[in-house]
Length: 143
Image 1 (cartoon, rainbow, N blue to C red):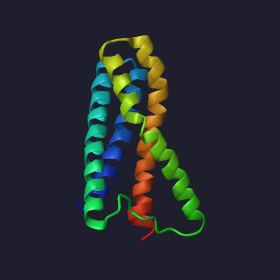
Image 2: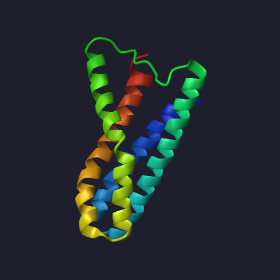
Image 3: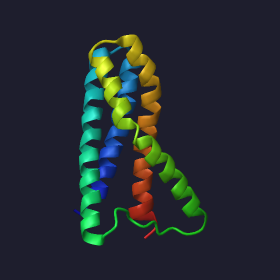
Image 4: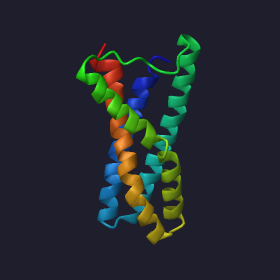
């Protein structure tokens, strides 16, 4: 179970790649490739959520806390908590936004899909990138 944070960071990194590739496919009008890439990105994010919740449960069971303590000092605390707060707030929206965006895309509601994708994509990408940053700040850089 100690490996779950690293696995979650890897899943976030995979999401970053898939989201970036998916955007390139749609810009090239490669709709089927875009569709498959975004479905895979959605599945990777669902898998992340499952492992994230499992990690939170395990952490609480073993330590009595739902969270890992940030050990950085000074200005790094402001940087970390700034990233963390924005990450958590936006991460709460991703499952809903991604589900709606995926549904509209699969149903070929193209105009509505594009409209919400312009909101979903940057939020989803930001959450994935900051998820990797939070992992490094908690488990690699400030020990």
